[in-house]
Length: 155
Ligand code: HEM
Image 1 (tube, rainbow, N blue to C red):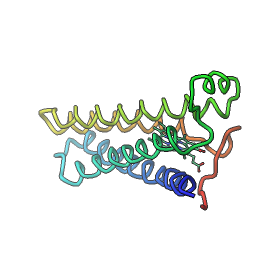
Image 2 (tube, rainbow, N blue to C red):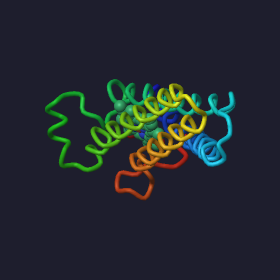
Image 3 (cartoon, rainbow, N blue to C red):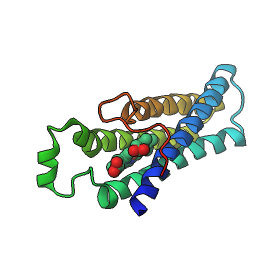
Image 4 (cartoon, protein in one colour):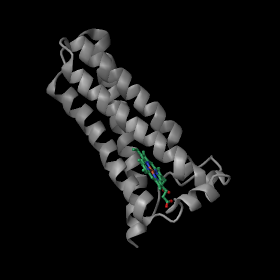
């Protein structure tokens, strides 16, 4: 019961991550190209993207450690699940990839804040969001993959 709620939240929140990331990418790339100042709206959008990733990380860790039946609860189970692509995907590739994406987004946002001029701020944000988004896109269990999941999960 609680499992299906958290899984649905985790599934739907992916769209918030992707939309906020796309919006933050477009704004920061435009700011970088046109050399405009970094506005409060730009900063809020960047923070919202990083926040949505953090929320996913929290739900993901909850699924991974407590709720999900498809992740290893012991080292022995981890070893046994390695040859099964679907189990390994969630046990290793998905979790590891998403943690890397969250780290990239945090580093980019911190480095953007530290930059002295707005063009460098926009550039650091644009490149960081782009790389984080590419990793997220590569680590999502899209429906066409052998271990795919629905695009819109109904609880
Ligand atoms: C940060 C961005 C993340 C995104 C965008 C994301 C996205 C998704 C999506 C779309 C699913 C499929 C949900 C469904 O079946 O409808 C999923 C499943 C899952 N995610 Fe994530 N995830 C993220 C981070 C994480 C992290 C960091 C972990 C673990 C440390 C994690 C653990 C899991 C697990 C265990 C499942 C499968 C749960 C199950 O079927 O029982 N996720 N994720």
